[in-house]
Image (cartoon, rainbow, N blue to C red; front, side):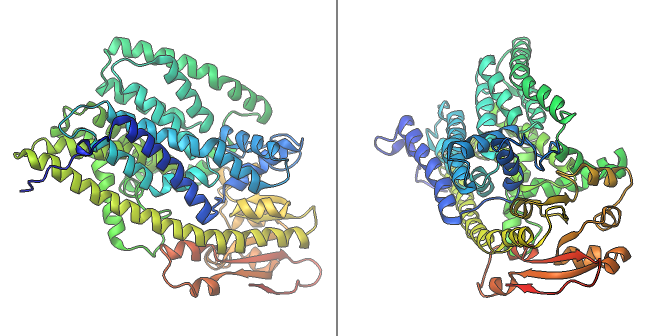
Length: 547
């Protein structure tokens, strides 16, 4: 069929060491270029960074002064930016996030890529170095991994520790000490890492190379090291906040608490196809504005990674099957969530890249002609790379516009307007907490209660919703997207209609309409129009509009 043999090994002087050096440079250059081009700072960064800022200013690790609420998920993602803020003079969040990127995020992302390469470089097959090259290319082209690694989230740290552990466990003899350190780092990055750790242990128990008795001993030793590393934070958080469980976890679980066990399982089964297909899809793929072929591609790749471990022809690929089984378990975890937010997906995407590259090369071994075993995987993976690269470029453009017109152009000005036009004792009810909460410097009542336990209590115990919480708490101000205003508040709350009046509107729609094609444009539109409302007291507040 195809007679040309395509191997990277055939390129003069292209050695394993040079592959590592070349891709290490790419692993640094691409996220750095993304940051410079987009200036992207994710909404949730400003939630955690407010904790970082308060800590550096002597107010404690709190969101609101004097209120000890565990409103962040990642200890490392909060403490490291605090360190960067302190080192840069404690006067600028821009300086802090850039130092955070340069010192921690980009090096962690690059190290994760090196570990992914290392999983392939030890192989010695007729394909020589081509699987490693494609693994590196796909890793650097995975859009959500790049963007969430440098936009203020903890993603790069999670990729680093997970890839380190996967590499260690894929070897014939596990270094239990290093593995325990990697697991401890994962726990400091996100406490739900215990699910990833369990998935790693089960997968390599089933498909690993070490004898099972020896493997169990190694896992127990690694677990002990993990406990030693993470226990100080666990105990301190329990003492300081009154619970080791982040309030963010409790708040998100409150959204589906009324469903019960049967409802949760039903929800998980219904969501599983979506979550699997979303792992390689654009950010928030439920918003229109993407070509349908994007979803076809992401679904095919996600399904392949999800089922590869049970494909009969994959029997000899123990590492690929282990990665696939972890992907399978993590996808189920995503489906169990009330809503799988996009920054959760990069670790699964990284494991899926290992599955796709190893899987395609493994399955190609069953082709009759040797030249096809070499050429067809290259053509197939090159096609996957091109599609992922296009997604990365379009996502970068989308996020540049999102930062310019939504974050910097809309949500930050809302916060600054509230700071200048509200009393210091006023309470503001809002769902989009990050920019608005940080720049307003006011007491926030957020839904579903990430930093507001009283909202969590009303949602979980009294079964209140987005609209009915307002009637109970009676905040002085409400900030609502146009969709929430017209479809959740006005139709469902007589109290809201009778007691709140629009003071000012922040509108970026006209500016977005002049830009032509925007990838995933309805994601930007969703956050482009906000109402700021004040509770009526004596007289009615004036109306206005901000452009």
